[in-house]
Image (cartoon, rainbow, N blue to C red; front, top):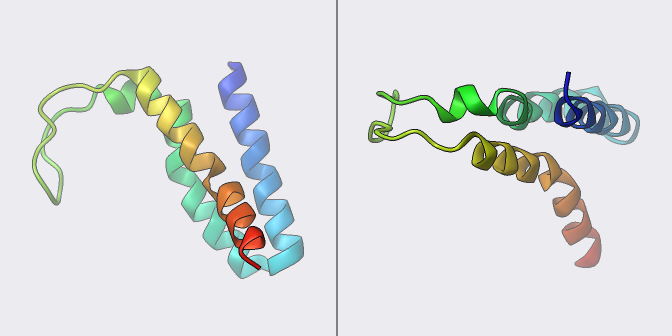
Length: 92
């Protein structure tokens, strides 16, 4: 198990615990559903980047994406809740 998987899993678990304590279980569950995509992007970046073919909506994917790019985008999505909280607190 590599460092990316361990750190992202710990961050996701901390998100869920903190949101459960501060906002309730319904919000924690919604956050857990949101965290599936960033965790998959981090944990399975090479497999997700290697996908080509048809999608249910939109145009097909014709070239592979670099796994490192998928992992970086996954980390960005993982930190999105923190960024949104900082923005919301700054605007108050």
